[in-house]
Length: 194
View 1 (cartoon, rainbow, N blue to C red):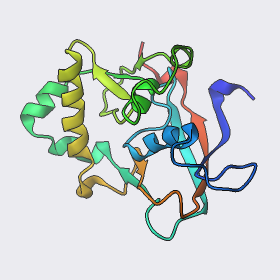
View 2 (view 1 turned 180 degrees about the horizontal axis):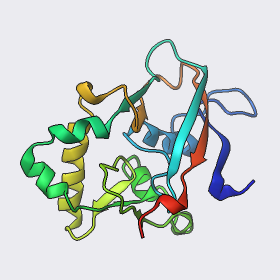
View 3 (view 1 turned 180 degrees about the vertical axis):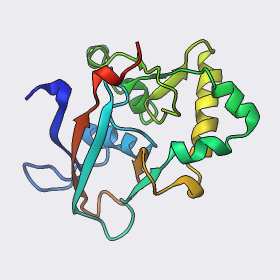
View 4 (view 1 turned 135 degrees about the vertical axis):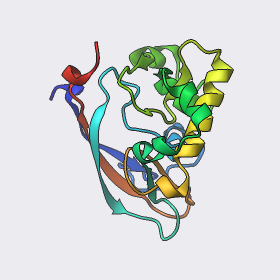
């Protein structure tokens, strides 16, 4: 299989697939998965982001652990004019390491960070989420504040349960089992702007 075309499936689980036992909360695998609870778009940190993901829930906890969805397309028209003017030409930098750093600073080694260096996507859209690290041309703190402000707007309940960004909701991962399998379909590099 061509790795650029996507993955057959990725397990999102708090269960060790070899033993079937709970993965301890402080295990690196669980710390890695905590970033799934941040609003994100799958594979936006790759030069060719995903076209879509298919998620199949195999085991779900009795409370929490749901997946929420928010539509940036539905939210854009309602942005306050001042905020809309600020984002008109802004380009977010998507960085896989940044999304994990929000859970545990320095989570990836330098070698791991080199696998997926930060990328930019030029198509006009509110393409953000946990992988969006900063904004080109703005100081890091100012760009992150802008991204945080936009994300707070687009993830209001009135824009949720549609599509695009998603996240897992917290659950007691030491008491309840959760197993989902995801298949991600790669986007088309021909659709990326020059």
